[in-house]
Length: 160
Image (cartoon, rainbow, N blue to C red; front, side, top):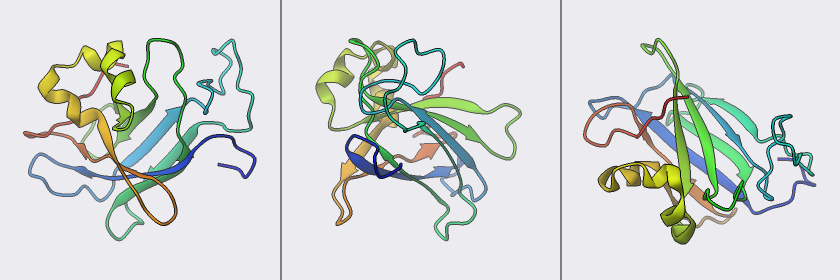
């Protein structure tokens, strides 16, 4: 996020857990998101981003003492009238033959989340695995998004 990037600045942080609830210390998380106006910095988005924001980040959990991933970003806008603001998340780690995809939605976007067709396609009892909880901090909002690879709290993953 550069100083001239428009939008609400926030921090996303979380950890990746295995099926036994143990922290995975060597996962790699990638995010891709729209800017605050809901535009992707990608040639496939015909609207084109009107900001210097690129919307991509990569973070390995190994260097952090708590094995967290941490992203300083802006809250994305809705990309169209149907989708709620969200961040696309890719998880890469040992033992995975192929990376997995999920989405992170925002807890303070309840009305938009209730109308999002992707989120609504997930069984109601599993939707909470895709919603990051907002917390206040002195430096601004922090959204907590833990990823569970297996087990009773397994995060919902999507086909590419």
